[in-house]
Length: 117
Length: 109
Image (cartoon, rainbow over all chains, first blue to last red; front, top):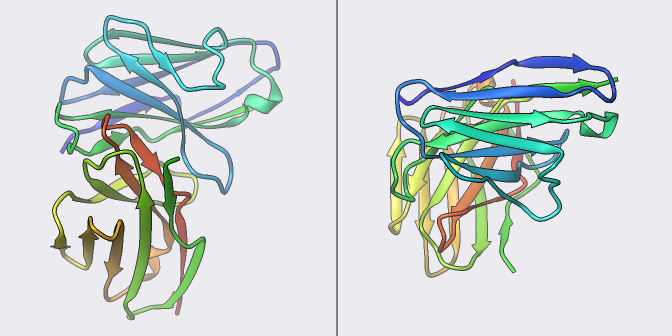
């Protein structure tokens, strides 16, 4: 089945530094990838839709200058949390749809738990 | 607005059957997904329904009624490892996924 690899799985960084999270589709091409954030005991919140070769589409309330997304190829999207602050501590999850049809399920990476101290 | 409702928490006994309901109101409908999410982990895909009726996959089944805006996930022969959150998500007219808040299922011996 389709596999999405996300790295790193955990990261602890100091306030003010930047963190890059990678998301790769291992056995399929993903023209679109999605970045989610999930706070404890809350539902998934879509942050942005990453489109290969073009600018990402951000959800309302998500700062595009703070959460930089680069979808450089059909198998790789990166999310960079710039100048991280403790309130950015969360579980970040990427996902990709295997096929183009809307009914194709999303496959999720294993997530990245970010802790900003 | 768009809305997905599912119970916050349910408790069931090992070996029993449990049904988790999901009702939705969305701008268009292009299918309903169920995902399982264990604590601290990413969601994993369970099922997809786009036509009315029951889809069975091993111990798990999912039902959809589009006219009622209603779905349920049925889990049979419950095992302790089924303790997790179950997320209902609907693809709207733009194929954007609208997520429910999830149902935390607690399995007791």
